[in-house]
Amino acid sequence: MLSPGGESRRVLRACLERRVQPLVGQALLSEYEDVLGRESLFKDCALDAQERTDLLDALLSVSEWVKIYLSWRPNLPDEGDNHLVELAVAGAADRIVAYNHRHLSRAELRFSGLRIVSPARLLEELG
Image (cartoon, rainbow, N blue to C red; front, side, top):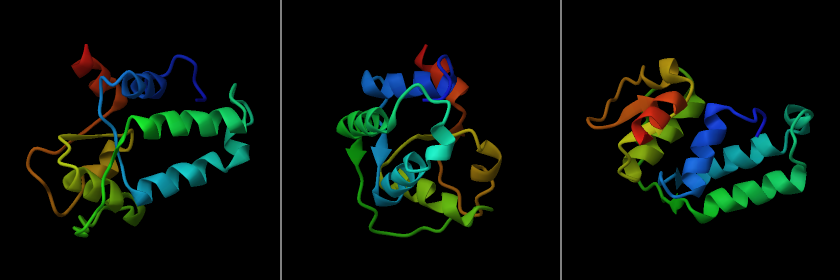
């Protein structure tokens, strides 16, 4: 939302075009809503608060809701990131797309077939 030509924007577009299947669970939804509520982050954003909410709603409409029944606790350096691995495992994802590769790849508990990729890498894979 903040960078007109950025990789994150292109990944979001790929999700909305259904070229990528995003997963969402309660913890991630709460995080999205929390971030969107921080007006200071969006002072230079072209979208107003209602448009940002509408964009989140559009993303949710193409996302698969995943209920997490088992907490794996992969013991990431940032405890607040553990839910991302749990969501990916519960949703049988093959990758987590994130800029903080360094933190997410340092899990003590690893899952074969689950990769951490940057937005740029995902875009390369999509062609």
